[in-house]
Figure 1 (cartoon, rainbow, N blue to C red):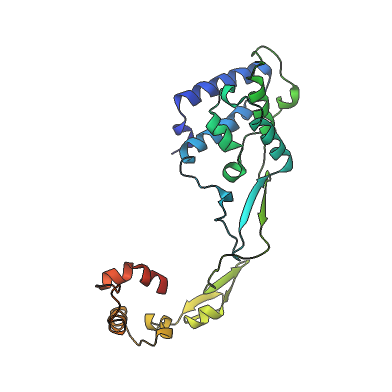
Figure 2 (figure 1 turned 90 degrees about the horizontal axis):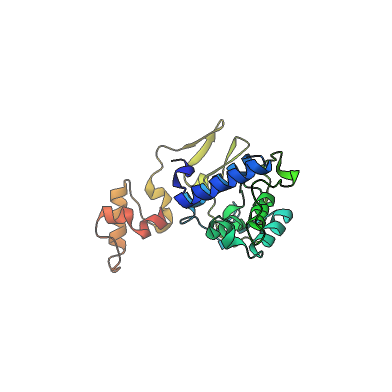
Length: 246
């Protein structure tokens, strides 16, 4: 569903006022469009979206990543947040705080310069719709895709198991882990040996089996004194222990 469908009545009233003001001041209406797009996204995902900077995002090497605005946007965001005008801007203050947090809206569409003009213009010195605004917003300039910076830690803190195969520029390579799991490269296709069984992947446990059921039975016999062992094959398949092993 389009994010605009999640806008509240209050949002629509605020945006209506912004469109009227922009039109009267000679501002390109796409600046308001971008705010509406970000506001709709906030209404749709804001309550469940995780902050990118919580320390739970890693690159393929297990190094934590954080994101920040460009220096210019960061300075503008700071001025807006410290202006004291958030509650009288006409827009939901909770949205503004979300919009100005790089962990949530690093890829924002809205122009922070235009957003600042709105927040300051609706504070104690309200600009009326018939007054002309500075011409910097008369011609629309898109934020583009390069309006944030991702920083990657120098050291890996998350252990990532080696995959069975790696693709770089469309060229596949079977890793040492993949070879142990019976994978091989044929041309540029990664294939697994047909006779490679579950037991082969569990060979480190010293258990020999030809089917998953045989493996489950053998596993149970080898852990007779373990009170936490799964009682059925179904339990085994969906147990955290099974997930860890497989």
